Image 1: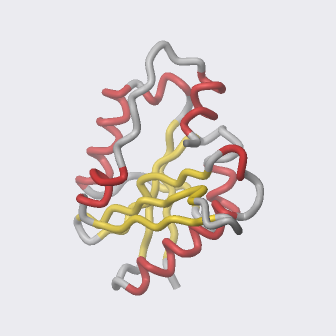
Image 2: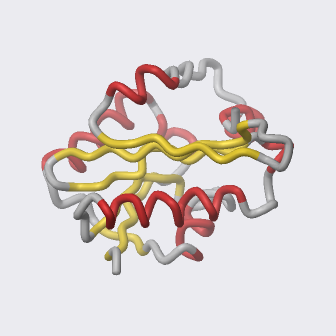
Length: 146
Protein backbone atom coordinates (compact mmCIF):
# COMPACT_ATOMS: atom_id res chain seq x y z
CA UNK A 1 0.00 0.00 0.00
CA UNK A 2 1.92 3.06 1.21
CA UNK A 3 5.24 1.16 1.22
CA UNK A 4 5.64 2.28 -2.38
CA UNK A 5 6.18 5.85 -1.14
CA UNK A 6 9.18 4.66 0.90
CA UNK A 7 10.52 2.60 -1.98
CA UNK A 8 10.28 5.63 -4.27
CA UNK A 9 11.94 7.88 -1.66
CA UNK A 10 14.73 5.56 -0.48
CA UNK A 11 15.31 3.47 -3.63
CA UNK A 12 16.53 0.46 -1.61
CA UNK A 13 18.16 -2.56 -3.19
CA UNK A 14 15.66 -4.71 -1.28
CA UNK A 15 12.46 -4.00 0.64
CA UNK A 16 10.87 -6.53 2.99
CA UNK A 17 7.31 -7.49 2.09
CA UNK A 18 4.69 -6.18 4.48
CA UNK A 19 2.99 -8.71 6.77
CA UNK A 20 -0.42 -9.91 5.65
CA UNK A 21 -3.60 -8.69 7.28
CA UNK A 22 -4.15 -12.17 8.72
CA UNK A 23 -0.73 -12.24 10.36
CA UNK A 24 -1.27 -8.75 11.77
CA UNK A 25 -4.69 -9.74 13.13
CA UNK A 26 -3.13 -12.75 14.86
CA UNK A 27 -0.79 -10.54 16.91
CA UNK A 28 -1.84 -9.13 20.29
CA UNK A 29 -3.46 -5.79 19.63
CA UNK A 30 -5.89 -4.48 17.08
CA UNK A 31 -6.24 -3.57 13.44
CA UNK A 32 -8.56 -0.80 12.22
CA UNK A 33 -9.40 -0.01 8.61
CA UNK A 34 -10.88 3.00 6.85
CA UNK A 35 -12.94 3.01 3.66
CA UNK A 36 -13.73 5.75 1.17
CA UNK A 37 -17.20 6.84 0.11
CA UNK A 38 -17.48 3.82 -2.23
CA UNK A 39 -16.67 1.50 0.72
CA UNK A 40 -13.27 0.57 -0.72
CA UNK A 41 -10.69 0.03 2.04
CA UNK A 42 -8.05 2.72 1.60
CA UNK A 43 -5.98 2.39 4.75
CA UNK A 44 -5.31 0.71 8.06
CA UNK A 45 -3.64 1.19 11.40
CA UNK A 46 -2.07 -1.70 13.29
CA UNK A 47 -1.53 -1.30 17.04
CA UNK A 48 0.36 -3.87 19.09
CA UNK A 49 -0.46 -4.42 22.74
CA UNK A 50 2.55 -5.81 24.54
CA UNK A 51 4.04 -5.26 27.97
CA UNK A 52 1.17 -2.97 28.89
CA UNK A 53 1.91 -0.67 25.95
CA UNK A 54 -0.22 0.36 22.99
CA UNK A 55 2.33 0.66 20.18
CA UNK A 56 1.29 2.00 16.78
CA UNK A 57 3.14 -0.49 14.61
CA UNK A 58 2.02 0.78 11.21
CA UNK A 59 -0.25 3.34 9.65
CA UNK A 60 -0.84 2.97 5.93
CA UNK A 61 -3.07 4.83 3.49
CA UNK A 62 -2.96 4.13 -0.23
CA UNK A 63 -1.09 6.96 -1.96
CA UNK A 64 -4.01 7.76 -4.28
CA UNK A 65 -6.13 8.46 -1.17
CA UNK A 66 -3.50 10.49 0.66
CA UNK A 67 -3.98 13.99 2.03
CA UNK A 68 -7.72 13.49 2.55
CA UNK A 69 -7.70 13.00 6.32
CA UNK A 70 -7.78 9.20 6.33
CA UNK A 71 -4.44 8.88 8.14
CA UNK A 72 -5.40 11.36 10.83
CA UNK A 73 -8.78 9.63 11.27
CA UNK A 74 -7.03 6.28 11.72
CA UNK A 75 -4.61 7.69 14.30
CA UNK A 76 -7.48 9.26 16.24
CA UNK A 77 -9.47 6.01 16.08
CA UNK A 78 -6.41 4.06 17.29
CA UNK A 79 -5.96 6.45 20.21
CA UNK A 80 -9.64 6.07 21.14
CA UNK A 81 -9.52 2.27 20.92
CA UNK A 82 -6.32 2.14 23.00
CA UNK A 83 -7.98 4.31 25.67
CA UNK A 84 -11.06 2.08 25.57
CA UNK A 85 -8.79 -0.93 26.18
CA UNK A 86 -7.30 0.74 29.26
CA UNK A 87 -4.05 2.16 27.90
CA UNK A 88 -2.86 5.57 29.04
CA UNK A 89 0.06 5.86 26.59
CA UNK A 90 0.76 5.12 22.95
CA UNK A 91 4.17 4.86 21.28
CA UNK A 92 5.49 4.43 17.75
CA UNK A 93 8.77 4.36 15.83
CA UNK A 94 9.24 6.36 12.68
CA UNK A 95 11.60 8.32 10.43
CA UNK A 96 12.47 11.71 11.91
CA UNK A 97 12.85 13.57 8.64
CA UNK A 98 10.26 12.02 6.31
CA UNK A 99 7.41 14.59 6.01
CA UNK A 100 4.61 12.05 6.26
CA UNK A 101 6.23 10.41 9.31
CA UNK A 102 7.49 12.29 12.41
CA UNK A 103 6.06 15.70 11.41
CA UNK A 104 2.66 14.08 10.78
CA UNK A 105 2.71 12.32 14.15
CA UNK A 106 3.85 15.49 15.93
CA UNK A 107 0.74 17.24 14.60
CA UNK A 108 -1.27 14.37 16.13
CA UNK A 109 0.27 15.05 19.56
CA UNK A 110 3.22 12.62 19.62
CA UNK A 111 6.59 13.83 20.94
CA UNK A 112 10.04 12.35 20.56
CA UNK A 113 11.16 10.22 23.50
CA UNK A 114 13.74 7.57 24.34
CA UNK A 115 12.91 3.86 24.30
CA UNK A 116 12.36 2.89 27.94
CA UNK A 117 10.99 -0.66 27.95
CA UNK A 118 12.52 -3.97 26.84
CA UNK A 119 9.98 -4.11 23.97
CA UNK A 120 10.91 -0.64 22.75
CA UNK A 121 14.65 -1.34 22.95
CA UNK A 122 14.07 -4.60 21.07
CA UNK A 123 12.39 -2.63 18.26
CA UNK A 124 15.53 -0.51 17.89
CA UNK A 125 17.60 -3.68 17.41
CA UNK A 126 15.11 -5.12 14.91
CA UNK A 127 15.19 -1.89 12.88
CA UNK A 128 19.00 -1.98 12.78
CA UNK A 129 18.95 -5.64 11.71
CA UNK A 130 16.53 -4.77 8.90
CA UNK A 131 18.71 -1.82 7.86
CA UNK A 132 15.95 0.76 8.31
CA UNK A 133 18.37 3.27 9.84
CA UNK A 134 20.38 3.41 6.60
CA UNK A 135 17.52 5.49 5.13
CA UNK A 136 17.51 8.14 7.86
CA UNK A 137 17.27 8.75 11.56
CA UNK A 138 14.74 6.54 13.33
CA UNK A 139 13.03 7.86 16.45
CA UNK A 140 10.52 6.81 19.01
CA UNK A 141 7.53 9.03 19.70
CA UNK A 142 4.86 8.76 22.34
CA UNK A 143 1.87 10.48 23.82
CA UNK A 144 -0.33 10.33 26.85
CA UNK A 145 -3.87 9.24 26.02
CA UNK A 146 -6.26 11.58 27.82
